[in-house]
Length: 254
Figure (cartoon, rainbow, N blue to C red):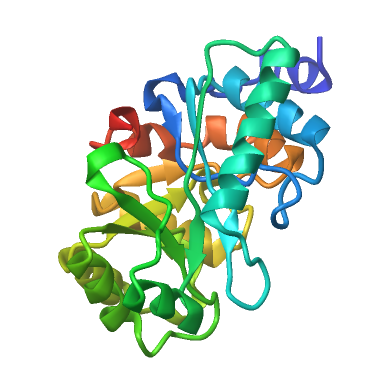
């Protein structure tokens, strides 16, 4: 019997039962491919991330390394080669029942606009829906956001804004997020935002997006094991996770 039970004469409350991510089916945002960005550094780390993602209930993963013109200069060919290496390593490690594909997380910079202008190949997910995952600076509002979104849409892509809850330049401007979505940009929230992993501000915005029913996709954005450990220890017990999973998320359609 615990100290509190002795003191009050009754059992202490049990923690809430963990939710499950199995219903999501697919995780569409992670940094599992090794050596391409600030995610996994080796095939061994990649395989461990695959094991833990599968243990969380996922059966399909879209692996999305960063693409930045001045830092992570990844190409479709290099990303696909890394995917094949991870597929081989997964098979050798005995991992089955996990579908692996690749896309990218494009940083909205001048090089990205140049890719669009020159009609270079962008890695997409969602089959014919051609979803393109992109991000911006966390602090500085991009001057060409609307122009870039229009260019993506004109090229036949469906833009997906990664972790909108983390952009501090949008804090206190929730109506801007509503407008972005009304203009055809899908919004993807990070699971760890529900536990305040990034900041209290990101947690508040994620909750507000969920309450307003404005979340289209959800991702782990897993860079390393710590991200998945936090999901397992805290996010699965978050009161907002059932609210999030009750939304008509697109993950299960991927």
